[in-house]
Length: 307
Length: 265
Image (cartoon, rainbow over all chains, first blue to last red; front, side):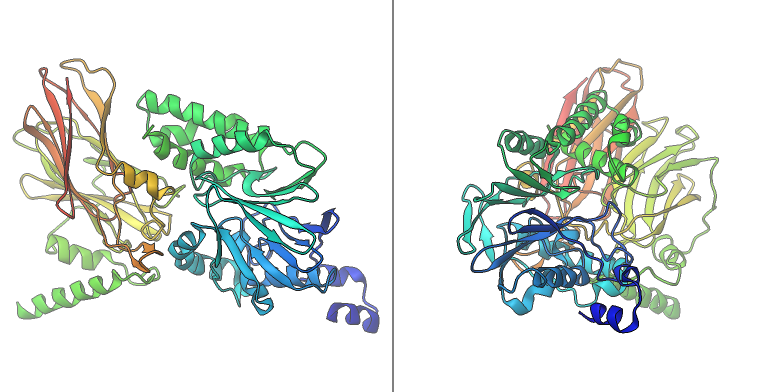
């Protein structure tokens, strides 16, 4: 609103406004479902940590936010963008998993008194990491971090027991998974439109990050791939609306590195050999490959050593 | 003498205080002079001993909780002249004195690799202590952070289910030929700096304290380890079996639990 006044009173161009921090475009996926697409960068003060896809689903009674942003500042921008569309209260803030780009905006919604919803293992994951996150992100996010609080889920979803949330004439089905991308992944399905929010079980364009189990993730992807959805909103990269969501591309990355790592392990090769040689043919397929690929190989290697 | 004792005591207390769950920033003062006094009694240590020790580390670690390092001795171990201890110091870790490999001339050409946690950008030092008492050091700077307080295990349940399991891995050995061997111990190696939500407290330190490797009951080497060693400690080494026999790995942890495994050669 301030921004709007500035333009009308001073007659500055809209561009001057857009490059300020109100430049937070949402995309509409289907009726009542919006998301902001994160950039394929590391979190920084410049991008205010807005590197993951975050958004919301609007029912007749209230709104569910699905992932809250990579900083308090992004959470605020998401809330402002939401308020430009609807006046309905936010009754749920759902976190698909613990990673900071999905969860650091939680506090921006606290004044709406929502239920915070997550996988049953999310609170433990957050408690064990929050100090670590606080020290790293307070520094790398700068001013955008101010106001950030770690708010753990109070409404938990158990593995094998999906939870239905009613937004008024619209139901969300939340499913908790066994260890895959992390040990506490959650997906959200809008039953009415068959739109699936995958959290980071699906990456498009941006290289995936393994923080759970490569074997578990491959198994979960194979299951998810067999379902059909009208629209899929991945954790990173563009939503797939009536098009292929690239499950295969992600599966191919994971199975390729798994197979090559197994070869190194069976040949008694070292972790260093694996990080130097495995999966390099995948480089052209992914943004930020050089920043995360070798870490993925490291994580997968120490898991596959125990097969 | 008393003054010196008090100095060391106050330094030790200072160090203990830094081993607190709260994060302490990268120390402004270099830690090495203090560590040298505490652990080496301020004895002479020859620096840049590149003629004796080759230390391989990544400059920047992919994962601060799993940093692979390799230590190679460039002179053969003989009965007259051998390295009896290799001390591994990670200056800026909460517990800098990270490992002590006790060696014998049983292994002639020493090359040992392991995986460590690095909590902040740090110098990493390897000090070879010879049988004549002389000490020789090489060091490298490693960029990594958060390795000691990083949450244990990406899949904590799977890790607990195999606690104490040991793998001895090697290619088909030939008598009289060097064979590369890896011993991996499934163990969370809790550092004491990791938080558990269920109990709402820091998980007690619980880590592997010693790994001993024998061949036909003769010690090849043993290593005292601390919380700077990664979860699922891995030790890789090369030895030459002179005759057929049994390679044995014996592991003792900080709760006096013992695990062992052996392999017929």
